[in-house]
Length: 458
Image (cartoon, rainbow, N blue to C red; front, top):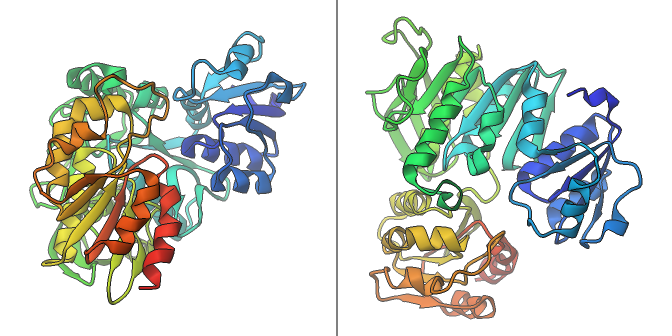
């Protein structure tokens, strides 16, 4: 698609993390950006400051007169008056993923996929490229703490770095030169119907890697092996092509030796670099190995990898420390899948042995709760105290018999409860814990600042 002929673009769901990154790209190109979303948020307010014009009523009278292109997210509500109007208007309308595919067509592309881990890896890759003074554009699925944005641009882009979303098979619009697959676990079964269909979709994604491209996959993912010629693996263990050794952790900061293979015909030929990594969580160290592998294959040198990992500050709502004082540590995390919750709690246990750990969890989607209630319960049973809030429905309608109690019934610890939002603050004020977590992908982030105010004064 020739974007030079496009002047005015309308975004449906402009406040979404992926959509807003794309809107920022077109604002950079000097396009007139309009959009609609249901709620005003910090992100939409920032977009408005950057030049976007956003409406918050599902009213066709708020649509500008002349639109050249409409971009929408597949998660957008299907009964929207504006969506249905624009679909019948004759104006070109594309999904976000299709537009990302158009942007990436003529550039070298790095696509990071996985049911979890992809946002952190994408942000790390972008930071490593920035430190190395590479020319690139990066579309992130979270807000980089280093740069306070989800869109990074450096020079005239020669590389496109993109978080490749499996939802609605969006990542099948990309043809990457380097692809990462961090995980293929049961999720989005409302879309796929089965784990087998999800795995098939990931295989199709890997099959879209360019003929001389490279796949970097987590070593325990068997479903994508053998599809492309250049198949490399990563993990914390030395059985992989990219791994770490001599790992030590002090005050949540890791030091280790990274072993990076760069010779695709001789994988025993390692490039070794001693690094320090300041983002807590062993799962984040593993994500850093994947990001370093990408940077290494893109030609970024050891010293720049070392500098980049040492200066990386993380991603908002990914194992983000909000409060730390003599009485309590408060960490906020986007974890909304049982595997993510397990990894988060395991890392907290490692960092705070013998401490009492409590969490407030907001389930995300009725279908995910229905499909994974037992797994959620098992992961949350690793805590000392847990609160489960009402399900955040996002795009879904309620499902009869599915609620917070679907999860609570599977939690094996005695200190468990269901609380509504208004009751959360009393739990925080009266609770007996050393570490508090807020977990979830819905609007639980609205509680972060009020909880921060309660805890920082302790």
